Image 1: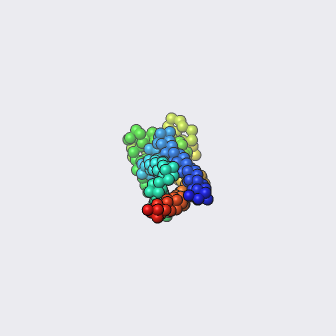
Image 2 (image 1 turned 90 degrees about the vertical axis):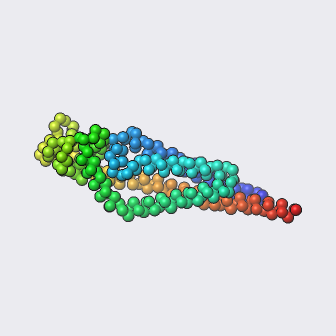
Image 3 (image 1 turned 135 degrees about the vertical axis):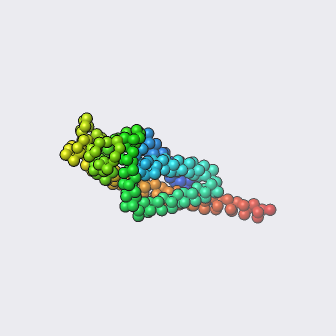
Length: 251
């Protein structure tokens, strides 16, 4: 193999391995974030799981897919295996297309998703005082996001179980004290009046830059990984096809 082709091969392998390393780190980070949401923020994750169909679990699963896909890419690059390299590039391309479809769908249906979250959150409130785990989780969310109810604090007035009439839980109070949630309309200045769905939406909006940067970085990494893989396969084909041709000519 010519020295120029050998240099290209080494450069492409080095570039691909760097991309795979970044991809692997991204997968590990996604797994850690998904697990931390479920463990360290258990109160929040219970309510979030009720309203968002297990988003933390989905994040963990995607991270695991990226983790194992990175391993496949590393083995393919290290062994210079064309079949594994093509499989790695194909799976990465498929994953990239799925990410685009999911992202566009989430953006297109963002208003509908917010309405669904609002309706599901109201159903969660109806379990307050009935299911101990839900009760503790809702209190945790309201204190964490400094909010009250799903749309606003008056949502609690329609809840028949768990709290007194025209009252809200103590977790709605700016300063938690005994009976601070009773006669909520008269004491509303002492309460968090904004709903939790809006507060969570604001929190997500404030982190759009970070989420967007991670998404763009991951997308560019995948594009580079696909490009390097295809170029590496091309050079490997140039490396081995002439060798086979020379052997056949020598017979």
